[in-house]
Length: 117
Image (cartoon, rainbow, N blue to C red):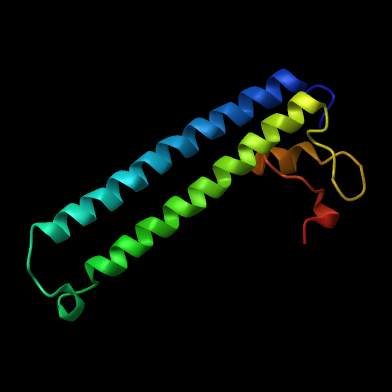
């Protein structure tokens, strides 16, 4: 972690990203609920609809996006724990600082660029 970017700044950045992820997750869940409701309101055979994608496919897409948001949420919460423990911004492999630019793009990163692979 950049010395000028202390724990308070890291916490603020992580909490802001967490708020974005929570909003995205809520939207994905609403979309899945809407698709489930739409399927209830119709007796159409969406599996054989020549007009496009099926409700099942759309539901699966939304569920996959929600799963990804849940994973990111968990990563961000773990990063907040690392801030509290004083290990945020330190590569878990080599122990060197993770570059500030990487943390800006991936605030929950646990590895430096060299060990990100």
